Length: 217
Image 1 (cartoon, rainbow, N blue to C red):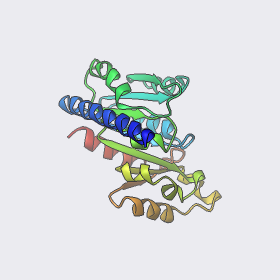
Image 2 (cartoon, rainbow, N blue to C red; image 1 turned 90 degrees about the horizontal axis):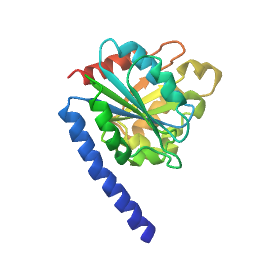
Image 3 (cartoon, rainbow, N blue to C red; image 1 turned 120 degrees about the horizontal axis):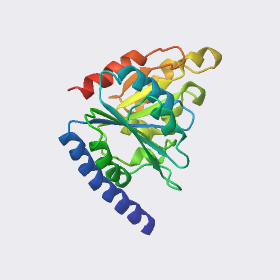
């Protein structure tokens, strides 16, 4: 009972700060997404491709969350857009407090219309922590199996968007795209689903146009 009370207090404080973050971002016209997945699903590559397609249309910034190293932030920095590293250490997720401290940096980057958070590679803890984003984006990849939504329902219930990534690998596996989508929609019928491959470009243009439409409202 004591552990449950502590967890509830932590989440309650996080929710309060997430609301502040959301209002601050909204007040400056910034649309934000929180990209969550297990390690190796390809979310950094998705962000790279997103930046390539949108940087001339939308003012962007990226906040990279990792337990150690700034390797992903270095990858994004090559595209000459603002990127900030949050090294979480032993924490397995970003939280609203960490984000709160980065907002002055975001607001100092000129015209930012789209802010992308890349969360720590983990499908469990990040699902429960609101950062103040407008949209949580769940990413699952073909090598992980089409039953992923059933195994990690909290994330898929919290997400507004699902990206099924690495679809170019379907022919090498027993992954069923239709079953994967059906499993996700069982958890959350309101999900918007994109089937994507960063290798052959499938779905990238549709995803970029979707983000641009939300960012330029």
